[in-house]
Image (tube, rainbow, N blue to C red; front, top):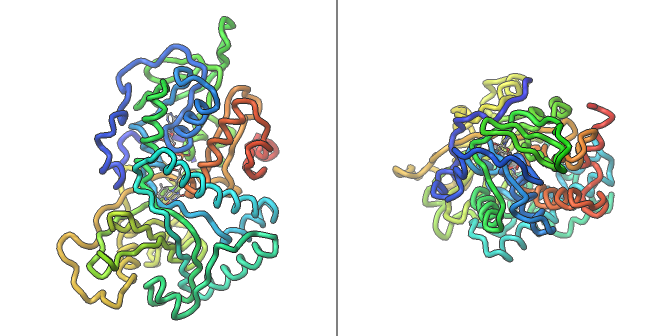
Length: 450
Ligand SMILES: Cc1cc2nc3c(=O)[nH]c(=O)nc-3n(C[C@H](O)[C@H](O)[C@H](O)COP(=O)(O)OP(=O)(O)OC[C@H]3O[C@@H](n4cnc5c(N)ncnc54)[C@H](O)[C@@H]3O)c2cc1C
């Protein structure tokens, strides 16, 4: 499929609707860009914002860094996800092992556990008001197929030396009681968090700007070309409709859109539209009975609903569930292969509403009051990679260009180590010093796409 810039009139997410007064939302929207700067970071999502922030922490001057964002600040997936920081505790092990080997699969899962710890520390250290809720998550098996697969994955991870000490298992009636989902067969539970992603990234951007960093919004980058003049250290010209910037270093944090400026990644990172919805719970899920743990209601690997109860009691449901059988699998994936995040899909709202009604359904007969039930839906674009691992590091053959992208709809549980790792690489560190799994290195693609 043809690469694309972000669509200009994207819908607003629940988080966007609640943060319209963010002072830097439309920063410099009418100003021409500076002529030259040391670092250009493309993208103001969690990858771009945190990489820029970490560059400053590592010693770069704020004044040397410019973030360019195609739309308003944090308008990509980071501002429109389901708010779930949910490390994969074991479930993906077999899949990752089949793609990258058991050792790398183990590292991928260990990295996710570390990410939760890093975000928790970050939010606490800086006293960030991002509605962070430190909790646990329940992986609810709703089919025997899913229960069998999870048991195999847990055993495989354990056999590979994976640490499962934080995973609790609830069987049968205990699973039903803990999850309040009547058809639960088994549930696994481990630490996770709920968080308002827009507020977190907006805090990072505000602090970056307070330290001298520059943010230009509504300023899509259309091309990056070699800088011809030899009068400065600049290596690249970054082209926008509001001028061209000469830069020494260009960092692509454009996730699903990476292939537009880096044609090498066009087939490797593909867009997939995802939808999230918010529900206002009925009284049986409110007050003292409000859900306190996040969940994934799992029918199969690709058929699941994530359930994230927010601090205010609202419940956000994400995931890829389609239960009405109206589409074939092929039709479903084709329809989702798009950069269009301007609208929503009604049938996915109906599917989620059905799952929502199933939670604590012992009292579902109680009629919904005006104001309860489905509240709002929004979409966003995921960056899906061919081997389910992100691409981090120096772009081969383009010295001074770097990439941090391809988070497979799971970036809140991955990026908080990748962006700091990339900032260290840019500052001269070796890969081993980042602590990241080797299979995240963009260099792995040289054989397959260059
Ligand atoms: C509906 C939905 C639900 C999700 N739920 C979860 C969840 O619960 N948990 C989880 O872990 N993950 C979830 N994700 C995935 C997660 O949001 C992403 O993995 C993560 O936000 C990616 O961050 P990023 O900074 O790499 O990309 P983005 O946030 O997409 O940032 C990229 C930015 O680059 C900008 N850009 C692109 N091209 C250009 C250009 N040429 N010039 C200028 N700017 C450009 C874009 O506008 C965008 O702002 C979800 C995603 C969606 C869409």
